[in-house]
Image (cartoon, rainbow, N blue to C red):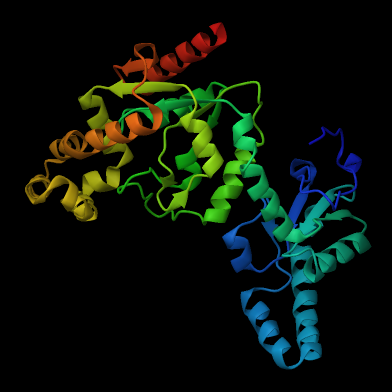
Length: 362
């Protein structure tokens, strides 16, 4: 995308191309679709200002099957009321020289209604040609090519050895970091659900990943945590997975007391209710055996949380992770290993500074 000095220098949309519009240059991006369409996926940063809401959308659709003209009349009434409300609630806050981008499902009637009304007010408005369908095509096409144009440093290591916190510290110090677990709202294991925060849809996850990737400087490395092909129920884009498998690795380790302490912090809800944690692990019985699972239950019943966390790691997660990491990323060289004595913030900050300095010398 070209760099532009002001919103009014945005060029006309190339309808023959799937190249992205310069989304960041608009004062407001309006998604004119219904709320359920918006929830499935949308342009990052877009605001949902539906021409018709879900109930109205269904009403118009049902009417259209028997009387298209009546359906258009009903839709128009809903649309005018909704546009008036959205204009009073939000659009009235914008300045006359602000520029808007509008899209709907295919770039048809709903985005046209918004564009026409905004232009009557005096705003400059662009409409995404082909709407969300065209945007979704661009996402798929980009995720098939862009990941291969970046180079990665993959941070490997067993469960709760500080990988994610180290990545966050690298990001705070200005490094390029792709936090797949953060984007997927999941910690990447059977226990990885984030309380009160459902995972996004697959399409929304794709949009989030691409939105991050396209902002990276291709001349600099991207730090990313070693992941399997799925984070929770979401698939990591295939070409990104392939690019990560080819990348150099950094194998991180930490002492067991520090890992247990981190478990208590990152899985506080299970530390408070260890029986619930063991209940979620019932499906592991064929892998660990009934005797091991019974021991986990006993530790949970007795409130021996630290012992339970350690047992889970040593008897299941560590062996499983070692197998999968060796298979997917290789064993790693001695020079690619980093032992973390402490997982506290100041220690991780110092480690991040050392990694950045080491990279600068390469």
